[in-house]
Length: 495
Image 1: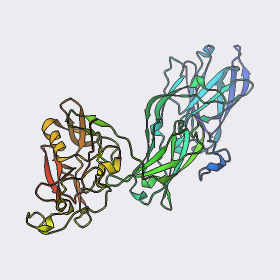
Image 2 (image 1 turned 30 degrees about the vertical axis):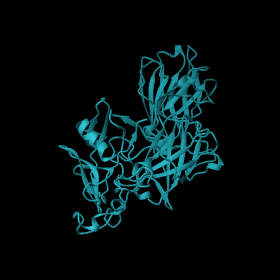
Image 3 (image 1 turned 90 degrees about the horizontal axis):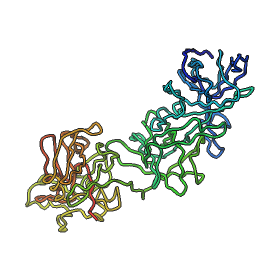
Image 4 (image 1 turned 120 degrees about the horizontal axis):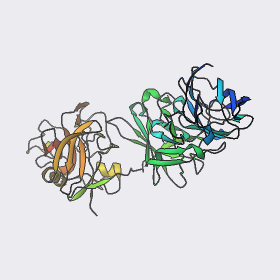
């Protein structure tokens, strides 16, 4: 294996190319500083118990991670008298190798603690590089069951004696998730969710806290109850309708907690919610690999935030089927709880089809809700999209509650999460964002403007229901055909 080296006179920093290092002293200078000529490097691996076997398990020891071109590791001498030593970088040319040797002059002190981290960072040359930022949001599935993209955050430590033996370990945990999903071809993201617990998304590690046998602890700077796994159909292994994805996460204590995987099926698809079986009781330990399988969980309801705008009800911050305020979410015909491929009069809830739909004297105009004397969908009817999808006390807004938004709030056309829509500010100064998500009809879509369903039947014809309509220049309530696939923004009553 060949390497390139660059030498600068920088303070107490030694950069080299990968992970497990074995150093043999060649000579000692006047200051008793050992000069090493050879460092042997090996890739790190995860400990994968026999009960968690995987197609990507290279050896009995676990998953191996070959080096890639340009890989680096920084090594810092933890000694004040090391100041003034040279700084150099060794870059592996032999991509894919699991071991190799570095040839050259390496000044390493005996009886000195050394610590290292992969990938190498642009350290401040005026100080010791002790605290390393970590970001697990970047450790996600990007290739077909390929683990080579999950190599970040490897540490090693050693104390010099006759030989320097650096042992490579991982700060994070590797998880393999398998989900049987008949609609895998629609999936565009997978989100892990923990109830009453948080994933560490970002944080720092202090390299000086490492030992040969123990990893440094992570100091969290950003947490979330959800963790998004990057995913696309072309980049995940699919066998017998089963999706297999990998992710690197920070160690997480799941003792007594529940873990779910939420599969998103595009902009016009329902979520598939899986309950994940995670054993042992306290999984996701540093440097360990875990395999999780999911079973459909129809009971799970995600938690969402409610905003008080100073009106009669609180409004949700995002649409049903969306994760963020700017995402469109799903499209639902009035009174339906699942999205679908085709939105017609023939397949919609409580709808009738007639050429005389909008004639008041036509019996065909009146569907069951009107004939039965009903004027709106009740939250516990089984047809309130918000209640059925989100649970708790969420429900669809009424026509009157949409009128409050129109008449008592300030509307500002803007952009969020890459989508245009309105920032709506209530009388008390709080605000929500409604994206302009368009509408679905038959098998087509119309993106000019946006429609949001209320729970209220139309005032003139019960084949209609009241919706909130807006475009960049206007916003109002109006009647619309109940077969159309529209957005749902839930509300909940104030306590």
